[in-house]
Each structure stands twice: as structure tokens, then as C-alpha cells.
Image 1 (tube, rainbow, N blue to C red):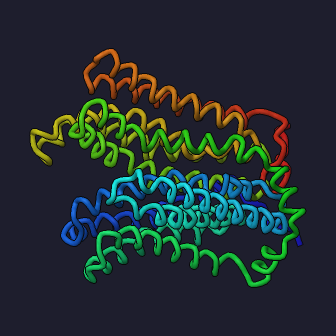
Image 2: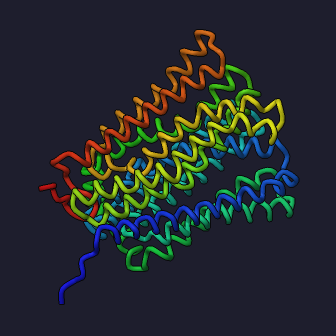
Image 3: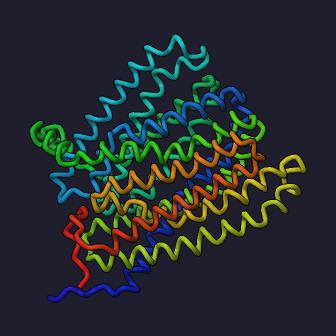
Length: 434
């Protein structure tokens, strides 16, 4: 019996539908969080929100490196047996890094403001939960559990919203927001664990020989060596500009920047990232080189039409919409949105194919691109402030540098996809174009 060959358009349509499904679930989850904000502001004080924001920023950064990036090595393992060993290595790394952070937090607690000292033990717990959840998400993408991955993007924010409201109604204190975040990660891990792993898989993880774990760590050394600083650079670009702007131009301007960034960057997070997840899942099937390049081109077109163009339009009209909607004092927010639109449009195009260097085991190239992007973002910001330029001019310079950095990422990924001599993707050897 001859297997039916799937046509290119049909496969592309399936990819678009998969990406749309994941994006729809992610958007639904985020809208759940947004819908609860008016309730949460009546249950928690501004100080509670501030402490939760500090906790979340720290956890997002540390959680991304909790597993020493061995979790992303799941993308390139040859089979499930090796994946189980890689997962054990990731769990060990999460435990080790969380323990180090716990010890560091305990030693530094006396130098920490009193209202933040309790984060010394909450941050390691949240960090470990995020690291484990990230590893489970990588497993989803490697073994094509796209629906489970999408459901996770709905379950996580929805469960956190429900828990935060419930804890607030029960008057469990300001830390309740943090505890709700940790429990929502536990809910996600439990959901994915029951969906992805059987009992024999759990036994195989616990019984995996230490020799195999050490061999995996040696074989995948590029992940902690290159992806750790790369991840830190990427999260610095996302989290640090608002802090720098606040320290350089005052907290009020940082507030304008924060509101503008939230309004402009939302589509990138909600839509572009699922496109990247779909590309990783497609690459894990081991299709030939030409097919991967065609998939990348298709997703770039989807990102341009669904995200980049609307974001540019939003940036163009935002100065005219912000004042009627928010009031005259919020005019700088609209102007900042115009500046950030250019960077976010480039980010939307870069995101769908951002994992290409990892899939081709070229982490050193990804690190070089991420460091270059960080320099292009923070260089103009710091130099412009030092020279005394107007804050808006500095932000425009920063956004132009960021857009250039994301363009470098696109060029690097397309260079690899068009090049020859790829080692392996996660499922099979990439077939060279004839």
C-alpha cells in the first residue's frame, strides 16, 4: 500500500491552522488575565503589585536559564530514549541552579529591603517551576504535541488569574499573587506531565544511568556555553530598557514607556511566538532542507501580514488615538509607541525562525546575534542619554538599533536555511538541496 504524499499547499495550510490554533489559545489566556485586572486592583494594593512585578521579572530571567538551557537540547535529540536522558539532565540542572539561588538569597537577605526579604525563598521555587515548565514545553514541540502545548498557553494564565482572584477574596495577603503564580506553574506541569509522560517514561528518567547523563552533558555543551548568555541577552533586551529609562529620565517617563511597550509588543508575544513553536515542531519531523526553507518563508509571510503590518499601522495612528483615549498627559505614550512599532515589526519577522541556529547546532551564531542586538539596543540608549539628547530621540535611536538587531537575526537564520552542511535536526538528517 502506497502512502499518500502530502502536497505543499496542504502542508502549509496545516501549519497555518496549527499556528492559528496555538495563537488563539494564547490570546484567550492573556485576555483572561486582562479581564481580571479591574478585580485585582480592588483586592491588592499598589505595593502588592509592585512586589509581584519585581518577583516576576527576576523569575522570568532566572527561569530561562534554570535548566542551563539543556531543555532546548530536546529539539535535537535523535529519539525518545535520548530525550528521557536529556530531560533527567535538565531536571538535575534545575535543582542545582535553584539551590544556588536559594543559598545566594539567604546570604543576601540582610542587605535586601524588608518588604522583599521573603522573595529569597519564593524566587527559587518560582524559578524551578518555570524551568521545569519550559522543559515540558520543549518536549511538546520535539514530539509534536502542538495541541497540548497550546492548551498549556491557555491553562497557565487562566489558572493564575483564577487563583489570584480567589486568594484575594480570601484575604491571604500580598504574597498571594506570588503564590498564585507558583501554583499556576504547578498546574501547567501537572497537565503536561500527565499528557506527555507515561509511568514507564518516569521510571526510565529515574533509572537513566549517570554515565549517560554525563555523556549527554558533554555532547550538548554548546547549550550552556552559548545559549545561557544568549538567553540572558534576550531577556535583558525585554526587561531592562524600562529600568534604564526610569533611572535616566525619571519614573514618569518609564511609566509611559511601560504602557507603550505593553500595547505594541503584545501581538508579538501572542502571535509570533506560536509561529516559532510551529516551525520547531515542523523541523522536528525531519523534512528535507528545501521544505524547511519553504516553511520559513511561509511563516515569514504570515508574520508580515498578521503582525508586522498591523503593528506599523498602530504605531502610525497611536499619537492621534492616545490623547482622546487616555488624556493629554499621555501624549508621550503615543509617540513612544510610534518608535517601538519599527522595532516590534522587525521582532515579529525574526521570531518565527529564531530557533533555527539551535536546530542547526549553531548556538555560537545565535549568541553573536543576540549580543549584537543587545549592543544595538543599549548602546544608543546610554550614549544618547550621556550626550543629553531628548528622551524621545533616545528611544527612537534605541528602537532603530533594535530593529537592525532583529534584521541581523533574520539574515542569520535564512543564511543557515539556505546553506549546506547542516549537522542534524531533532528527528533526522536534513537533506541537502539538489
